[in-house]
Structures are given as C-alpha cells and as structure tokens.
Length: 164
Image (cartoon, rainbow, N blue to C red; front, side, top):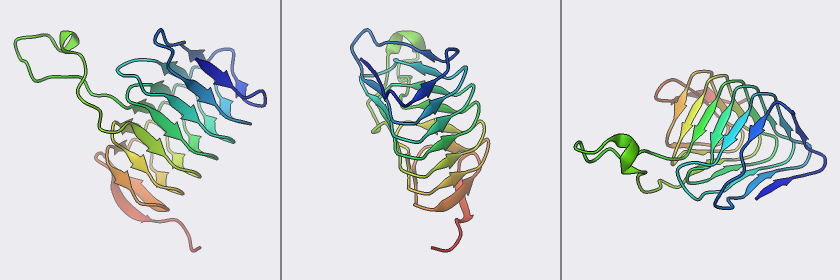
C-alpha cells in the first residue's frame, strides 16, 4: 500500500516498488524523494513511514525489512542505505540466499531533526535519537543518543550539537 501526501514531491526518476504483501509505504507532507531513490519491499513485513519535511537524496536505498520509521525534518544525503533486515547465515550447508532472514532486531527508527551524511549505512535495530548528526560513511547499528555527533564504522560519538 502506497500513501503519498499530496504536498510531497517524488521525482519521476525515484523507484518505489509496491509490496506484493501489501506493506505500507507512506511519505509525509512536504517531503522530497529525489531521483534515483529506491524503496524496496524485501526481508520482512515492516512498514516504511517517512514523516513531514524530510529530504531523501539521490542514490539512497530503503528496504522495508523489519520496518523503517523516519520522523519529521530528517535530511538523508546521497547514497545512504537503510537495511532493517539480516540474512540468516547459520547453516553452512545451505546457501545464504536459501536461508531467508534472521529474527528482527526491531527495524530502524530515525527520530526528528536528524542529518545522515553521504553514504551512511543504517542496520536493523538502529535507533537514531532526535537531533543527531551522523558523518558521511558511518555505519549505524545501535542506539545513538539525541543531539550527538557521530562518525565511523562502527559509529562512535565524537561530540554534541551546539548549546540548547
């Protein structure tokens, strides 16, 4: 099921696949989905809900997996990957492709007023707190505290956004 607010802008060059299972993909008011953004139902039954006033830039891929919730006023730079799913790998006698997916770690939650730099990878179980800034090329898989500045692979806290 695809719900796009009438005030949202979705590039005709974006690729939003409809789910064969009826998974909800929702894009909020005044949100911009740029060219070559891919939203792909795969790896679970989670929904993708993108809040208001967001901008998701070119080359970003969002898998539905175990679910993605993006708050309001979130900026996602080019070529990011949001992958809220994990392939099963426990049986070395079976191909990874044939093993399906592991149990959910909770999907991905990105709270309001967050900036993800170019090429950031966000994995299943990540919770990015309100006001966070994540540097380009970082890999996020845990909880990031609100208003923190984070960088690295794996990500680590390197500072905090300016005074309140």
